[in-house]
Length: 506
Image (cartoon, rainbow, N blue to C red; front, top):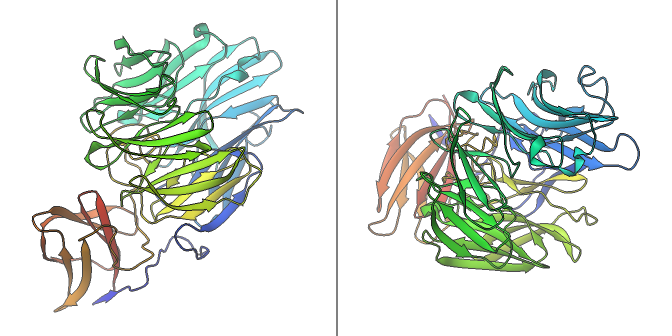
Protein backbone atom coordinates (compact mmCIF):
# COMPACT_ATOMS: atom_id res chain seq x y z
CA UNK A 1 0.00 0.00 0.00
CA UNK A 2 0.99 3.66 -0.22
CA UNK A 3 1.48 5.92 2.76
CA UNK A 4 1.95 9.66 2.44
CA UNK A 5 4.72 11.34 4.37
CA UNK A 6 3.40 14.68 5.66
CA UNK A 7 6.71 15.30 7.43
CA UNK A 8 9.67 14.82 5.13
CA UNK A 9 12.53 12.69 6.37
CA UNK A 10 15.91 11.70 5.07
CA UNK A 11 17.42 8.29 5.90
CA UNK A 12 21.15 8.50 5.34
CA UNK A 13 22.93 7.31 8.48
CA UNK A 14 22.13 6.04 11.92
CA UNK A 15 23.05 9.40 13.47
CA UNK A 16 20.31 11.99 13.42
CA UNK A 17 21.14 15.43 12.03
CA UNK A 18 20.36 18.50 14.07
CA UNK A 19 16.97 19.97 13.28
CA UNK A 20 17.27 23.39 11.67
CA UNK A 21 14.98 25.71 9.77
CA UNK A 22 15.84 27.23 6.41
CA UNK A 23 18.76 29.61 6.79
CA UNK A 24 19.91 28.09 10.09
CA UNK A 25 23.11 26.19 10.92
CA UNK A 26 22.55 22.42 11.13
CA UNK A 27 26.06 21.60 12.34
CA UNK A 28 29.68 22.67 12.10
CA UNK A 29 32.91 20.67 12.08
CA UNK A 30 36.13 22.17 13.43
CA UNK A 31 39.10 21.40 11.16
CA UNK A 32 41.57 24.03 12.46
CA UNK A 33 42.80 24.76 8.93
CA UNK A 34 41.35 26.65 5.96
CA UNK A 35 38.50 24.51 4.58
CA UNK A 36 37.98 24.26 0.82
CA UNK A 37 34.73 23.59 -1.03
CA UNK A 38 33.62 19.96 -0.59
CA UNK A 39 32.65 17.20 -2.99
CA UNK A 40 29.63 15.01 -2.19
CA UNK A 41 29.69 11.25 -2.81
CA UNK A 42 26.87 9.00 -3.98
CA UNK A 43 26.31 7.92 -0.37
CA UNK A 44 26.29 11.63 0.62
CA UNK A 45 29.70 11.47 2.29
CA UNK A 46 31.28 14.94 2.38
CA UNK A 47 34.92 15.14 1.25
CA UNK A 48 37.04 18.27 1.65
CA UNK A 49 40.66 19.35 1.94
CA UNK A 50 42.26 21.90 4.23
CA UNK A 51 45.38 23.99 3.71
CA UNK A 52 47.25 26.33 5.99
CA UNK A 53 50.66 27.95 6.09
CA UNK A 54 52.30 27.82 9.50
CA UNK A 55 55.51 29.61 10.43
CA UNK A 56 56.97 26.56 12.13
CA UNK A 57 57.67 23.25 10.42
CA UNK A 58 56.20 21.78 8.25
CA UNK A 59 55.34 25.12 6.60
CA UNK A 60 52.36 24.21 4.41
CA UNK A 61 49.97 21.81 6.11
CA UNK A 62 47.31 19.91 4.18
CA UNK A 63 44.69 17.34 5.19
CA UNK A 64 41.85 15.35 3.62
CA UNK A 65 38.59 14.73 5.50
CA UNK A 66 35.52 12.55 4.99
CA UNK A 67 32.41 13.33 7.05
CA UNK A 68 29.09 11.56 7.35
CA UNK A 69 26.05 13.66 6.40
CA UNK A 70 25.40 14.50 10.07
CA UNK A 71 28.85 16.07 10.42
CA UNK A 72 30.59 13.23 12.26
CA UNK A 73 34.10 12.30 11.18
CA UNK A 74 34.32 9.23 8.95
CA UNK A 75 38.08 9.34 8.37
CA UNK A 76 40.91 11.83 8.17
CA UNK A 77 44.38 11.86 6.60
CA UNK A 78 47.08 14.33 7.59
CA UNK A 79 49.14 14.54 4.42
CA UNK A 80 52.09 15.91 6.39
CA UNK A 81 52.12 12.87 8.65
CA UNK A 82 55.05 10.74 7.56
CA UNK A 83 53.22 7.51 8.37
CA UNK A 84 49.69 8.40 7.20
CA UNK A 85 50.39 7.76 3.51
CA UNK A 86 52.96 4.99 3.85
CA UNK A 87 55.92 7.37 4.07
CA UNK A 88 55.09 8.72 0.60
CA UNK A 89 55.34 12.39 1.51
CA UNK A 90 58.10 14.26 3.30
CA UNK A 91 57.31 16.39 6.32
CA UNK A 92 58.53 19.70 4.88
CA UNK A 93 55.02 20.56 3.64
CA UNK A 94 52.19 19.74 1.26
CA UNK A 95 49.46 21.75 -0.45
CA UNK A 96 46.26 20.13 -1.72
CA UNK A 97 43.67 20.89 -4.39
CA UNK A 98 39.98 20.43 -3.72
CA UNK A 99 38.91 16.78 -4.16
CA UNK A 100 37.34 15.24 -7.27
CA UNK A 101 35.35 12.00 -7.19
CA UNK A 102 35.49 9.22 -9.77
CA UNK A 103 32.46 7.16 -10.74
CA UNK A 104 33.51 4.45 -8.27
CA UNK A 105 33.93 7.02 -5.48
CA UNK A 106 37.72 7.23 -5.63
CA UNK A 107 38.96 10.59 -4.32
CA UNK A 108 41.48 12.28 -6.63
CA UNK A 109 43.71 15.21 -5.69
CA UNK A 110 46.54 17.31 -7.02
CA UNK A 111 49.25 17.58 -4.39
CA UNK A 112 52.34 19.79 -4.18
CA UNK A 113 55.01 18.36 -1.89
CA UNK A 114 58.47 19.55 -0.90
CA UNK A 115 61.53 18.59 1.03
CA UNK A 116 64.53 20.81 1.63
CA UNK A 117 65.81 21.83 -1.78
CA UNK A 118 63.18 19.97 -3.87
CA UNK A 119 59.58 20.52 -5.06
CA UNK A 120 57.24 17.86 -6.43
CA UNK A 121 53.84 17.73 -8.11
CA UNK A 122 51.71 14.59 -7.71
CA UNK A 123 48.41 13.12 -8.76
CA UNK A 124 46.92 11.17 -5.89
CA UNK A 125 44.09 8.63 -5.61
CA UNK A 126 42.57 7.78 -2.21
CA UNK A 127 40.07 5.07 -1.23
CA UNK A 128 36.78 6.77 -0.47
CA UNK A 129 35.80 4.25 2.23
CA UNK A 130 38.99 4.20 4.28
CA UNK A 131 41.16 7.14 3.22
CA UNK A 132 44.00 4.79 2.31
CA UNK A 133 46.17 5.64 -0.66
CA UNK A 134 45.40 3.73 -3.88
CA UNK A 135 48.17 5.26 -5.97
CA UNK A 136 50.48 8.24 -6.30
CA UNK A 137 51.83 9.56 -9.60
CA UNK A 138 54.78 11.92 -9.68
CA UNK A 139 54.14 14.40 -12.49
CA UNK A 140 56.80 17.05 -11.93
CA UNK A 141 59.88 17.75 -9.83
CA UNK A 142 62.50 20.44 -9.47
CA UNK A 143 65.63 20.94 -7.41
CA UNK A 144 64.26 23.97 -5.63
CA UNK A 145 61.53 24.67 -3.09
CA UNK A 146 60.14 28.07 -4.10
CA UNK A 147 56.98 26.74 -5.78
CA UNK A 148 54.74 27.58 -2.88
CA UNK A 149 53.51 30.85 -4.30
CA UNK A 150 51.57 28.78 -6.85
CA UNK A 151 48.29 27.26 -5.65
CA UNK A 152 47.35 23.65 -6.35
CA UNK A 153 44.70 23.43 -9.06
CA UNK A 154 41.68 21.13 -8.93
CA UNK A 155 41.77 18.17 -11.33
CA UNK A 156 39.09 17.62 -13.98
CA UNK A 157 37.60 14.30 -15.07
CA UNK A 158 36.67 13.76 -18.70
CA UNK A 159 35.44 10.82 -20.79
CA UNK A 160 36.67 7.32 -19.92
CA UNK A 161 37.69 8.48 -16.44
CA UNK A 162 40.63 10.45 -17.81
CA UNK A 163 41.97 12.96 -15.31
CA UNK A 164 43.64 16.28 -16.08
CA UNK A 165 46.04 17.87 -13.57
CA UNK A 166 48.01 21.10 -13.59
CA UNK A 167 51.37 21.15 -11.83
CA UNK A 168 53.81 23.98 -11.28
CA UNK A 169 57.13 23.55 -9.52
CA UNK A 170 58.50 26.95 -10.48
CA UNK A 171 57.52 30.55 -11.10
CA UNK A 172 57.62 30.54 -14.90
CA UNK A 173 56.02 28.67 -17.82
CA UNK A 174 59.13 26.49 -18.00
CA UNK A 175 57.77 24.60 -14.95
CA UNK A 176 54.03 24.66 -15.79
CA UNK A 177 52.48 21.46 -17.16
CA UNK A 178 49.06 20.03 -17.89
CA UNK A 179 48.93 16.24 -17.54
CA UNK A 180 46.47 13.58 -18.70
CA UNK A 181 46.33 10.56 -16.38
CA UNK A 182 44.20 7.41 -16.51
CA UNK A 183 42.32 6.15 -13.46
CA UNK A 184 44.98 3.42 -13.03
CA UNK A 185 47.71 6.12 -12.75
CA UNK A 186 49.21 5.57 -16.23
CA UNK A 187 50.26 8.81 -17.94
CA UNK A 188 48.78 9.65 -21.35
CA UNK A 189 50.63 12.90 -22.00
CA UNK A 190 52.09 16.06 -20.48
CA UNK A 191 52.03 19.47 -22.17
CA UNK A 192 54.24 22.40 -21.22
CA UNK A 193 51.82 25.32 -21.01
CA UNK A 194 51.00 28.32 -18.87
CA UNK A 195 49.17 27.35 -15.69
CA UNK A 196 45.90 29.20 -15.38
CA UNK A 197 42.68 28.41 -13.50
CA UNK A 198 41.69 24.73 -13.31
CA UNK A 199 40.68 23.17 -16.65
CA UNK A 200 37.13 22.26 -17.69
CA UNK A 201 36.00 19.62 -20.16
CA UNK A 202 33.50 19.97 -23.02
CA UNK A 203 31.04 17.33 -24.18
CA UNK A 204 33.44 16.14 -26.90
CA UNK A 205 36.37 15.90 -24.48
CA UNK A 206 37.95 19.25 -25.43
CA UNK A 207 39.98 20.69 -22.56
CA UNK A 208 39.60 24.43 -21.94
CA UNK A 209 41.61 26.71 -19.67
CA UNK A 210 42.64 30.34 -19.58
CA UNK A 211 45.86 32.22 -18.88
CA UNK A 212 46.33 35.99 -18.86
CA UNK A 213 44.36 37.23 -21.91
CA UNK A 214 44.32 33.90 -23.75
CA UNK A 215 41.82 31.06 -23.82
CA UNK A 216 43.19 27.63 -24.77
CA UNK A 217 41.44 24.58 -26.23
CA UNK A 218 43.23 21.23 -26.38
CA UNK A 219 42.11 18.04 -28.07
CA UNK A 220 41.79 14.94 -25.83
CA UNK A 221 45.21 13.76 -27.11
CA UNK A 222 46.88 16.96 -25.82
CA UNK A 223 47.35 18.66 -29.19
CA UNK A 224 46.31 22.28 -29.42
CA UNK A 225 42.91 22.84 -31.01
CA UNK A 226 43.10 26.61 -30.85
CA UNK A 227 44.24 29.49 -28.68
CA UNK A 228 42.71 32.92 -28.91
CA UNK A 229 43.52 36.33 -27.49
CA UNK A 230 40.20 37.30 -25.92
CA UNK A 231 41.28 40.01 -23.48
CA UNK A 232 40.42 40.29 -19.85
CA UNK A 233 43.45 38.72 -18.15
CA UNK A 234 41.53 35.58 -17.27
CA UNK A 235 41.18 35.41 -13.50
CA UNK A 236 38.05 33.34 -13.11
CA UNK A 237 37.30 29.69 -13.56
CA UNK A 238 35.40 28.57 -16.66
CA UNK A 239 31.87 27.30 -17.22
CA UNK A 240 30.34 25.57 -20.25
CA UNK A 241 26.78 26.06 -21.49
CA UNK A 242 24.44 23.46 -22.96
CA UNK A 243 25.44 24.50 -26.51
CA UNK A 244 29.17 24.30 -25.67
CA UNK A 245 29.71 28.04 -25.22
CA UNK A 246 32.59 28.73 -22.82
CA UNK A 247 32.12 31.48 -20.21
CA UNK A 248 34.75 33.21 -18.09
CA UNK A 249 35.50 36.57 -16.54
CA UNK A 250 38.56 38.78 -16.21
CA UNK A 251 40.06 41.65 -14.32
CA UNK A 252 38.82 44.03 -17.03
CA UNK A 253 35.31 43.84 -15.45
CA UNK A 254 33.81 41.76 -18.25
CA UNK A 255 32.12 38.40 -18.70
CA UNK A 256 33.02 36.70 -21.99
CA UNK A 257 31.02 34.14 -23.98
CA UNK A 258 33.26 32.27 -26.42
CA UNK A 259 32.44 30.02 -29.40
CA UNK A 260 33.88 26.55 -28.68
CA UNK A 261 34.63 25.86 -32.36
CA UNK A 262 37.18 28.60 -32.98
CA UNK A 263 37.53 30.71 -29.82
CA UNK A 264 35.79 33.75 -31.28
CA UNK A 265 33.93 35.96 -28.81
CA UNK A 266 30.15 35.61 -29.11
CA UNK A 267 29.30 38.40 -26.69
CA UNK A 268 30.69 40.44 -23.80
CA UNK A 269 28.84 41.73 -20.73
CA UNK A 270 30.12 44.46 -18.43
CA UNK A 271 30.35 43.79 -14.68
CA UNK A 272 30.84 46.09 -11.69
CA UNK A 273 34.37 44.90 -11.02
CA UNK A 274 36.93 42.19 -11.68
CA UNK A 275 35.47 38.72 -12.15
CA UNK A 276 37.62 36.43 -10.00
CA UNK A 277 35.23 33.53 -9.40
CA UNK A 278 33.65 30.95 -11.69
CA UNK A 279 30.40 31.71 -13.56
CA UNK A 280 27.46 29.36 -13.07
CA UNK A 281 24.58 28.74 -15.46
CA UNK A 282 20.96 28.46 -14.43
CA UNK A 283 17.69 27.75 -16.17
CA UNK A 284 17.21 29.21 -19.66
CA UNK A 285 21.03 29.49 -19.84
CA UNK A 286 21.09 32.62 -17.65
CA UNK A 287 24.70 33.20 -16.55
CA UNK A 288 25.43 34.27 -12.97
CA UNK A 289 28.79 35.73 -12.00
CA UNK A 290 30.33 37.54 -9.04
CA UNK A 291 32.44 40.67 -9.49
CA UNK A 292 34.46 42.63 -6.93
CA UNK A 293 35.44 46.28 -6.87
CA UNK A 294 37.35 47.29 -3.75
CA UNK A 295 35.05 46.64 -0.76
CA UNK A 296 31.90 46.15 -2.88
CA UNK A 297 30.79 42.88 -4.48
CA UNK A 298 28.11 42.37 -7.13
CA UNK A 299 26.22 39.27 -8.23
CA UNK A 300 25.11 39.70 -11.85
CA UNK A 301 22.54 37.76 -13.86
CA UNK A 302 22.98 37.96 -17.65
CA UNK A 303 20.62 36.73 -20.35
CA UNK A 304 22.05 35.13 -23.48
CA UNK A 305 23.48 37.95 -25.60
CA UNK A 306 24.80 39.77 -22.53
CA UNK A 307 21.75 41.76 -21.44
CA UNK A 308 21.72 42.18 -17.67
CA UNK A 309 18.66 40.69 -15.99
CA UNK A 310 19.42 41.89 -12.45
CA UNK A 311 22.25 42.51 -10.01
CA UNK A 312 22.68 42.29 -6.26
CA UNK A 313 25.31 44.43 -4.50
CA UNK A 314 26.66 44.18 -0.97
CA UNK A 315 29.73 45.30 0.97
CA UNK A 316 32.32 42.59 1.54
CA UNK A 317 33.93 39.84 -0.50
CA UNK A 318 31.35 37.60 -2.17
CA UNK A 319 32.16 34.09 -3.37
CA UNK A 320 31.10 32.39 -6.58
CA UNK A 321 27.40 31.49 -6.53
CA UNK A 322 25.73 28.08 -6.50
CA UNK A 323 22.38 27.67 -8.26
CA UNK A 324 19.52 25.74 -6.63
CA UNK A 325 16.56 23.90 -8.17
CA UNK A 326 14.13 26.61 -7.04
CA UNK A 327 16.06 29.34 -8.88
CA UNK A 328 17.68 30.73 -5.73
CA UNK A 329 21.43 31.32 -5.49
CA UNK A 330 23.77 30.87 -2.55
CA UNK A 331 26.91 32.94 -1.99
CA UNK A 332 29.40 33.23 0.84
CA UNK A 333 30.31 36.66 2.20
CA UNK A 334 33.30 37.79 4.25
CA UNK A 335 35.67 40.73 4.68
CA UNK A 336 37.14 42.99 7.33
CA UNK A 337 33.73 44.61 7.94
CA UNK A 338 31.62 41.49 7.37
CA UNK A 339 31.07 38.56 9.69
CA UNK A 340 31.46 35.41 7.54
CA UNK A 341 27.99 34.62 6.25
CA UNK A 342 25.99 32.51 3.84
CA UNK A 343 23.34 34.34 1.80
CA UNK A 344 20.33 33.18 -0.21
CA UNK A 345 19.49 35.42 -3.19
CA UNK A 346 16.26 35.39 -5.21
CA UNK A 347 16.21 37.41 -8.45
CA UNK A 348 18.46 40.12 -7.02
CA UNK A 349 16.86 40.24 -3.55
CA UNK A 350 18.30 38.91 -0.30
CA UNK A 351 16.06 36.23 1.23
CA UNK A 352 18.23 35.64 4.29
CA UNK A 353 21.76 35.85 5.65
CA UNK A 354 23.11 33.18 8.01
CA UNK A 355 25.92 34.46 10.23
CA UNK A 356 28.52 31.72 10.56
CA UNK A 357 29.90 31.21 14.05
CA UNK A 358 33.55 31.68 13.15
CA UNK A 359 33.48 35.48 13.40
CA UNK A 360 37.28 35.74 13.22
CA UNK A 361 37.48 34.39 9.65
CA UNK A 362 38.11 36.57 6.64
CA UNK A 363 37.58 33.67 4.27
CA UNK A 364 34.53 31.71 3.11
CA UNK A 365 34.70 28.95 0.50
CA UNK A 366 32.35 28.80 -2.48
CA UNK A 367 29.08 27.22 -1.26
CA UNK A 368 28.08 23.71 -2.35
CA UNK A 369 24.42 22.66 -2.36
CA UNK A 370 24.01 19.08 -1.17
CA UNK A 371 21.45 16.58 -2.45
CA UNK A 372 19.06 17.23 0.45
CA UNK A 373 19.23 21.01 0.13
CA UNK A 374 21.91 21.45 2.78
CA UNK A 375 24.40 24.17 1.81
CA UNK A 376 28.06 23.66 2.81
CA UNK A 377 30.68 26.40 3.21
CA UNK A 378 34.12 26.45 4.79
CA UNK A 379 35.95 29.12 6.78
CA UNK A 380 39.45 29.36 8.20
CA UNK A 381 38.64 26.71 10.81
CA UNK A 382 35.24 25.13 10.18
CA UNK A 383 32.99 23.42 7.66
CA UNK A 384 29.41 24.61 8.12
CA UNK A 385 26.18 22.91 7.08
CA UNK A 386 23.26 25.35 6.68
CA UNK A 387 19.73 24.32 5.79
CA UNK A 388 18.85 25.64 2.34
CA UNK A 389 15.51 25.50 0.56
CA UNK A 390 16.22 23.27 -2.48
CA UNK A 391 18.84 20.87 -3.90
CA UNK A 392 21.33 21.71 -6.63
CA UNK A 393 19.67 22.59 -9.94
CA UNK A 394 19.82 20.29 -12.95
CA UNK A 395 21.06 23.08 -15.23
CA UNK A 396 24.02 22.98 -17.62
CA UNK A 397 26.58 24.33 -15.08
CA UNK A 398 24.93 25.05 -11.69
CA UNK A 399 28.08 25.27 -9.54
CA UNK A 400 31.83 25.72 -9.58
CA UNK A 401 33.38 22.56 -11.17
CA UNK A 402 29.93 21.65 -12.57
CA UNK A 403 28.62 18.91 -10.23
CA UNK A 404 28.83 17.49 -6.72
CA UNK A 405 31.66 15.16 -7.76
CA UNK A 406 33.46 18.33 -8.99
CA UNK A 407 34.34 16.70 -12.32
CA UNK A 408 34.41 20.02 -14.26
CA UNK A 409 33.00 18.05 -17.23
CA UNK A 410 29.79 19.20 -18.90
CA UNK A 411 28.65 15.54 -18.97
CA UNK A 412 29.84 14.85 -15.42
CA UNK A 413 27.38 12.93 -13.28
CA UNK A 414 27.64 13.83 -9.63
CA UNK A 415 24.87 12.64 -7.31
CA UNK A 416 21.57 14.32 -8.17
CA UNK A 417 19.53 16.36 -5.72
CA UNK A 418 17.00 15.03 -3.25
CA UNK A 419 15.06 17.88 -1.73
CA UNK A 420 14.15 18.04 1.93
CA UNK A 421 11.24 20.46 1.83
CA UNK A 422 10.70 22.58 4.94
CA UNK A 423 7.10 23.32 3.94
CA UNK A 424 5.25 20.28 2.64
CA UNK A 425 3.42 20.92 -0.59
CA UNK A 426 4.11 24.67 -0.71
CA UNK A 427 5.11 26.41 -3.93
CA UNK A 428 8.45 27.97 -4.76
CA UNK A 429 6.85 30.13 -7.38
CA UNK A 430 3.49 31.65 -8.21
CA UNK A 431 0.89 29.38 -9.80
CA UNK A 432 2.68 26.05 -9.22
CA UNK A 433 0.99 23.43 -7.03
CA UNK A 434 1.42 19.72 -6.38
CA UNK A 435 -0.59 17.23 -4.33
CA UNK A 436 -0.01 13.52 -3.77
CA UNK A 437 -2.85 11.14 -2.93
CA UNK A 438 -3.78 7.46 -3.07
CA UNK A 439 -6.58 6.38 -5.40
CA UNK A 440 -7.57 2.70 -5.66
CA UNK A 441 -4.23 1.58 -4.23
CA UNK A 442 -2.22 3.64 -6.70
CA UNK A 443 -0.20 6.79 -6.15
CA UNK A 444 -1.61 9.83 -7.97
CA UNK A 445 0.08 13.18 -8.43
CA UNK A 446 -2.22 16.15 -9.03
CA UNK A 447 -0.48 19.23 -10.42
CA UNK A 448 -1.36 22.80 -11.36
CA UNK A 449 0.67 25.07 -13.66
CA UNK A 450 -0.27 28.42 -15.22
CA UNK A 451 -2.47 28.00 -18.28
CA UNK A 452 -0.49 26.76 -21.28
CA UNK A 453 2.74 26.35 -19.30
CA UNK A 454 4.80 23.17 -19.72
CA UNK A 455 6.70 21.34 -16.99
CA UNK A 456 8.08 18.01 -15.87
CA UNK A 457 7.41 15.69 -12.96
CA UNK A 458 10.61 13.95 -11.85
CA UNK A 459 10.66 11.02 -9.44
CA UNK A 460 13.82 10.31 -7.40
CA UNK A 461 14.69 7.28 -5.30
CA UNK A 462 16.51 7.58 -1.92
CA UNK A 463 19.92 7.53 -3.65
CA UNK A 464 19.06 10.70 -5.53
CA UNK A 465 18.69 8.82 -8.85
CA UNK A 466 15.92 9.90 -11.20
CA UNK A 467 13.68 6.90 -11.90
CA UNK A 468 10.99 8.65 -13.92
CA UNK A 469 10.51 11.88 -15.89
CA UNK A 470 7.03 12.87 -17.13
CA UNK A 471 6.20 15.89 -19.30
CA UNK A 472 3.07 17.77 -18.18
CA UNK A 473 1.00 20.77 -19.34
CA UNK A 474 -1.21 23.24 -17.43
CA UNK A 475 -3.06 21.06 -14.92
CA UNK A 476 -3.91 17.41 -14.54
CA UNK A 477 -2.94 14.15 -12.82
CA UNK A 478 -0.48 11.33 -13.38
CA UNK A 479 -0.38 7.89 -11.79
CA UNK A 480 2.85 6.29 -10.63
CA UNK A 481 3.66 2.59 -10.31
CA UNK A 482 6.49 2.43 -7.76
CA UNK A 483 8.11 -0.36 -5.80
CA UNK A 484 8.61 -0.25 -2.02
CA UNK A 485 10.76 2.69 -0.95
CA UNK A 486 10.96 6.42 -0.23
CA UNK A 487 10.48 8.73 -3.21
CA UNK A 488 10.75 12.42 -3.90
CA UNK A 489 8.36 13.83 -6.52
CA UNK A 490 9.46 17.15 -8.01
CA UNK A 491 7.38 19.42 -10.28
CA UNK A 492 9.53 21.80 -12.34
CA UNK A 493 8.36 24.54 -14.66
CA UNK A 494 9.71 27.83 -15.98
CA UNK A 495 12.69 27.90 -13.63
CA UNK A 496 10.66 27.06 -10.51
CA UNK A 497 10.35 23.81 -8.57
CA UNK A 498 8.19 22.27 -5.86
CA UNK A 499 8.47 18.83 -4.28
CA UNK A 500 6.80 16.39 -1.95
CA UNK A 501 7.73 12.96 -0.64
CA UNK A 502 5.87 9.65 -0.38
CA UNK A 503 6.69 6.36 1.31
CA UNK A 504 5.68 3.12 -0.43
CA UNK A 505 5.26 0.17 1.96
CA UNK A 506 3.95 -3.37 1.66
